[in-house]
Every structure is written in structure tokens, then in C-alpha cells.
Image 1 (cartoon, helix red, strand yellow):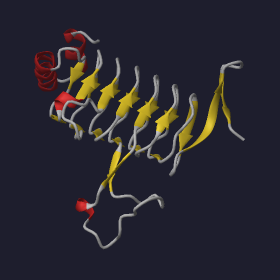
Image 2 (tube, helix red, strand yellow; image 1 turned 180 degrees about the vertical axis):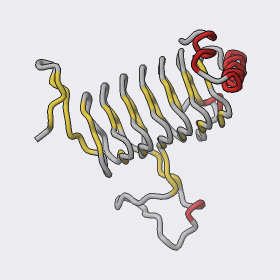
Image 3 (spheres, helix red, strand yellow; image 1 turned 90 degrees about the vertical axis):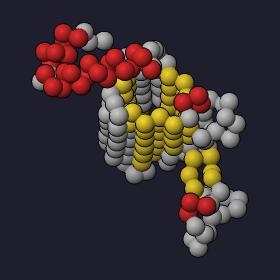
Length: 203
């Protein structure tokens, strides 16, 4: 963690005062966190677990809406950093591993208004979107994952350890460990070869 002196050297004085305010507020309300930059919108705090060393940028929104108020439905591991305007929402289970880096404007959700999968009872176009029955599927993000700018991670996705998701990708299906995935929908384009210690193109 940067010292107060390092922050002072990095930023203009007015910005430094703002960061000092955020640091004091973090230690008062989220003592296990490293630094939370406010405003920080959290809903259903009792149903959210933060690991040690959590860091959040400006304007993040983390919301939990469990059917059972005593359930913890968002679990964030140790040394996780999320940057500005990240939005995480859960009704059943969003689990983020250790040492995960999440860039700005990322959306992660285990739920959606309605079922459009083609299986089971389907939501119809003439029903009111906000009144459609929720569809929920677990989202699991492994350790050492890096998620790029403006990525969307949708219900039912598992992202394996060590994987990188490129900017502007939409993750609609699970990704294996130790790959680089990009696109809409996201698909692996490279995999790390532990023998050669290089990222290699997937043919």
C-alpha cells in the first residue's frame, strides 16, 4: 500500500486531500479494505463479504438482493482491486477469487429480468420487463484473473484462474484457466504454455 507521502507526491494538493478523506472513511467503515474511493454505493452490505486488501475506484456500485437476508451472495477474495464505476449485482452467488484486477466500467451479474435461454418457461416480449421473473445462475471468477475495461460478465459464467478478458468483451459462457479471451461473445484466442513460459495463439 502506498504511504501518505507517496500519495502527496503523486497528486495535486486538492486531490490529495480528497484521497486522505477516502482513506480515513475506508478505515472507519471498511477496516479490512486497502482503499475505497467515494462515492461508493453498496446495497445489502450484510450479504457481501470483502476479503483483506480490497481496493475500489470512484463510483462503484455493489448490490446484493438475496431471497434469504442472512445469505452472503457476493464473496470477494483478498487483494482484489476494482476500478472506477464497476457494477456488481447478485441474487444468488457471485464469487471473485484472490488477486483479481478489474478495470473500469465492468458489469458482473448473476441475474437478469426474464428467461431468454430457449429452455423452460420463456419471458415474452409483451410482458413488462421489470415484472418478469428473475433468472439466476452462479458467477465464479477464479484467482489471478484480469478483466479489462467495459467487460460484461453474464449469469452462469465461470472464469478459470489466471485468465485475462480483453476490453469490451461480453462473457456469455465459461472460460478455462490461463487463457486470453476477447470478443462478443468472448472466446479464447491465446493460452499460456507453462513449458515454454509463453502465451501461444490457439489455432
